[in-house]
Length: 591
Image (cartoon, rainbow, N blue to C red):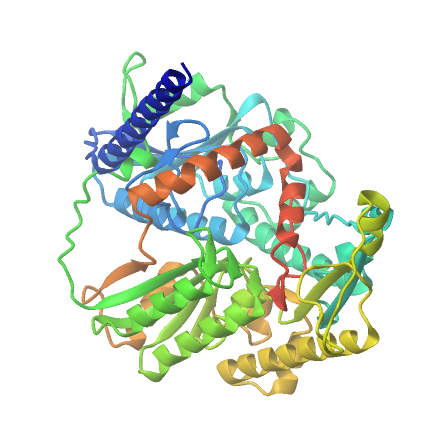
């Protein structure tokens, strides 16, 4: 009988695996078919653009674009495809205008600025842009402000209130747990360790965040005010006095054109398209439009401008498409620089930094590309700070957005003495046998014993040494004296505009500007080259095997925790603080 149940159980497991793998194969086939299916665009269509998600720099894997958490096909494009589709729509006779369906977005101002600028280019075609929202955040309104007309739900709101940033501090929690952090840093503004040793911001940190927010706010007002045909003083007065408290206020002060329900908005679109009241509007989402044929002539070109996307934390070893792993990127950059068809490199950075060693390793590989005579241009997205700036600083030209967060030239290290926590909370004690004085030198985040003064001295020297090397790398790359770099370093963050004033950035612009600059540096004229994106996107099975566990678990946790999910992310990031870090001084949420 035992043997019978044994075989029966094995059969059930086998059948389950058979059907499960078959299910995954069907999903893979569906994903590939959906991504490859050509969409036919009807005449007199409107392109709908939604930005209600955290827009990555680059669309994730095209071959298998399935969300394992919600079990739906994704149509969330990256910045690269959003820009390309807006450009395509500009000359597509079937597309008569763009409908911005806006609400909230977690995307940073750097990427939003590039989308906004591309929409301004679209308007030059003479086609209309109409925006609509039920609740518009300031980021959503920033995009909406380019529109010919902005409509708001009669019971909706536009949240124009200015910008704020809130930081989270863990010192009291660590004290209660009996964990004592040991901090080593270089740079007065390198405040990444403040949440573990203070209960509030230091004066240095408060100063840099205030000036950063003021820079972003000034840029916001300077761009939005003329778009809404008002002076900067008028818009600033509206925001500073919180005059927009309901939909009627938004209309009264000219923030929106009118108050419409969604059906009225569609009536408005019908009128623009010359349709009768009962005729259906052809609204095409940007996800579907991405699969529409591109009528612009694009002959194959041998010469390439390589665009290397570096997005996420900088980590040692191997990684995935969500981080910048040194081993993977060294191989990638080597492959690119040894490709005879690659005439220029654009390093597209969207990273707050990470491992100092990994940053140095990638810096070296980019230097080898330059030594071969390949022009290197750095393009900064939302964030290119600390390690993100480290890997960018040797570029021939650095391009950043007005509101890119960059700089943060500094280093820190963090350890935690957790002996009391283990003993008092868990009842665990430790004992050590060693052969020399430093056999048990700290090599992990959590320590079971206090760190000695000699060890502290060694660790601080290591941080200082890396910081001085960082200053030297920036000085060489920017053609500045080390002392001059030191004055704008100290771990301090800057907006793109501020960084340009300080000599850390050359050009204010986006990734398309960077590509054009790189091509010109390589002596390539428009039409003489093509862009090639790196790294290659993940294969179907890699996406399946990793996505089923990672995507689903992350989605479920996000849904359960909601707004508090970011606190879990902060705690998870602590696990990445092994060794010296070239990382942004804080996780900044501008709201």
